[in-house]
Image (cartoon, rainbow, N blue to C red; front, side, top):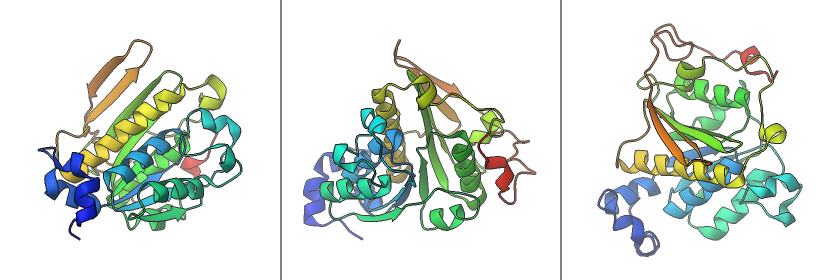
Length: 262
């Protein structure tokens, strides 16, 4: 589908960029991206992808908005308390950019439903806050051949990386499997709201780069930052040939027991 006159005006500042232009903007318009999580990370990912003109955007979240979310989850407001986050996100994104094709998944992902949910998308964004979900999404994207952009944010710091299935290092190359003990969360140690926003914006930037074919995505790289010192570090990582997921003898199916919360 080509750009129309409204597109040319709406996305003018993107089109002026030498790395994007009309060709890159057309790729964005025809892309299919699924964002899993419409919370702290997902709010900024979704807003910026919708604003940038990602034409087909999936929103997946089974949770409802509560008051403690509003400190960082900028897609939702006080009137949305008790509302499903995917529904709330849909309303805001349609108001921002009515021409987008938005699809809502009001469910928690598991081994049984994840393949069907991600099936129609070229690229998946992981914007969740649970280790079990992070590994499930990573493993499914590798298994079913979906490019993945993933991030984490907690306390004053965060990290972001991109994964090209069976080509670049995946999340399991770094951390192997979900921890068997309970790990710190925003609910237990806190999170600066702007940190979630920062890493969500970085995820959105990665998505745009990958789709438009501009710059160097974070394949085989992990970008981290502690905002107390504003110390950004880009760490080179290698695909592990013995990785549980993407290695030579990697997974051939998803096992429910692995992704249960401790």
